[in-house]
Structures are given as structure tokens and as C-alpha cells.
Amino acid sequence: METPVGFVACTVASSASRDLAAKTQSRFLTRHPQTVRSTRRNIHTHSTPNQISRNLSSPLKMVIDYSELPKERSKELAVMVNGLPGAMASEVAKAVTRRHLKLLPYALTGANVTEKEKQINDVHVQLITPQYASEALEKIHACYPNMVCIDYTHPSVVNANASLYASKGISYVMGTTGGDTEKMISEVKHKGGHMYAIIAPNMGKQIVAFQAAMKIMADQFPNAFAGYTLTVVESHQKTKADTSGTAKAVVASFNKLGLNFNVSQIEMVRDPKQSVDRMGVPEEAALTGHAYHTYHLTSPDGSVNFEFQHNVAGRTVYAEGTVDAIQFLHHQRSLKSKQHVFDMIDVLRGGAMK
Image 1: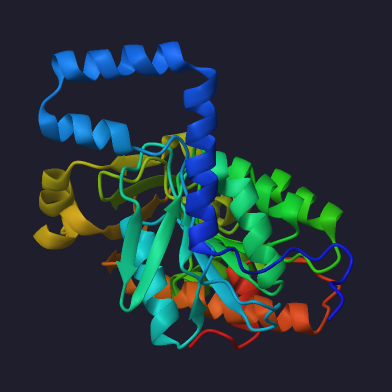
Image 2: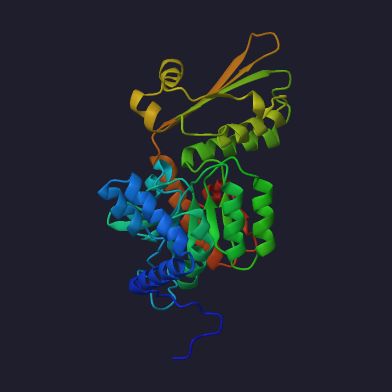
């Protein structure tokens, strides 16, 4: 059968990958014999026998095994969960398999991650470091043109990842907060075509409903709380690097209601002891994962007080909501929707949240 123009072969045998690595190493040995002799001399002088064996056998380049990719293009929805082996990405990957969706055995990971793979139920997921991300995405997308990336990485790389997805035309669900949302939206709209994205600070159904209710109230009753003062405290596990995106979204609605509150005034609690003692977080969740938020409003004379809370222990509600987002996005893409960027309120309004 004639190969279509522009078609990237979908199967790269693992043995071929190993041969390529061997040839690369051979060329390096030929071109840099002095460096190799010096390296070996240092190994023999300063290393234990186990270290010598390990250093001499270490590949010069990460070898990615593409043998699990199909021989021909697959039209099925396939999900790539980036951010493994992180806790949130792991929870989402498990939710993907619970819904019987295709979990791709590849994931983008951080530059400093030492693990080579992550086991998600019966799927062995290879972890791909940033320098190989572009090549890997291109090969995988060639085989799964309907793939969707889920991003639960880190605020420091969120925009770089979003730009990479857009450059490849890969639709994505952005769960990582702390990035430049307007830039992401602009990139997706510019790409157009088969490219779609959901960008949202929170994936939990009930939390999204609360956000929607606050937005509706702000739109219909602007300045209803004019003159009131606001305090916002949010508590998360210590690994969360940025201020809660959910809190920022709710604050935006409060400001439309007449308050004057800057997101820099949001108090972040990241100490587990304070989370337990002050916020009432269960001890286990204080360490592993939680999202506790309190918004307190006080009238000018102090005689009236309002308090809103939404407290989540664990990550399951976010993981399930993320999978809802994937299925909603895939449906909109199949309809060739004119709208290319969505948030979770769109998902909720579409009745897609289970």
C-alpha cells in the first residue's frame, strides 16, 4: 500500500531504537577517543565495580520505545497524561483507565525526574524528559490524530507546554494553574482547525458550579457588596507552588460585586500543621492533597458577615472532572465546533460532568 504524503510511520521497533543508540555511542567513541579514555581512567580510579558497570553501560541518549504505537493511524480517542509521576497526574491517569479510555503509554515529565516509567494499573507509561518532548509528541500524534493531552505539570512550564501542544496541533486540557491564560487562548485560536483546548483553574464539578453561581450573581447584581471588606485564605499541600486558581476566579466575581481586592492579598497556607490546626484539614490530606478555601466578607460597620467555604480532601473529584473535560472536548471536536477554547463552566452547562 502506498504511504500517504506527510505520513509518519507509526511503528518504530524497540530493537531499531536500541540499534540507533548503539550506533550513536559508536560514533561518539570513534570521534572522541581521548574523552572516552579519560572517562574510563577516572572511572577505574574513583569508582566501585558496580559504578563502573553502570557508567559504561549508560546510554548517551534517552531511548524511547515506540513499539507500542499502532502500525496504522488510529481514530480512537487516546489520552496522554503529562506530569507523571506526580500525584495529581497519577490520579487522573487512573481515572482515565476507570472510564475505559485509551491511556497512552507515554507521558511528558520534568527535567529533574529520575524515574523512567510509571505503572498505572496495567499500563507501563514511559516518562519523557523535556529535550525529547517535541519529537515524541510528533510521532505519537502521527499515530493518534485524535489524542488529547492532559497537563498537570508545574506553573514554571505551563506556557511552554501549551505552546508545544499548539505547535503540533494537539488538543489539550490544561489543569496546571499559574500560567498566562490569555496567551494560551490566543495560541489555540490562532491554530484553529482541529485544535481545541479546555483551560480551567478547577476541574471539580461542585466547585465549578459554585464558581458559575458566583459569576452569575456578579453579572446580575453588580456592586451588591460595595463597601464590604474581604479576606481569603486557601490551604493546599506544600507541593503546590502557586496561589489557588479557583480562589483567583472567585475573587474576580467578588470584585464585580463591588469589592476592591487584589489577588496578591490571598493568604496561602502550605504548612501541614497550620492546615490541620487552623483550617481543619484531616492530617493525612494535609500531607497528600487537599484544597480548602474560606472567603469572609464584612459590612462597613461590622454588623453583617458572610462566609463561603469549599473544602476538598483528596484529588478524586478533580480527576473525575478532568476526564469529563476530555470527553466533552472530544465531542466538541467531532462536531467541528466554531468555539475552540472552553472552560469547565462550558463543560458543566453541556451536561458533560458525571
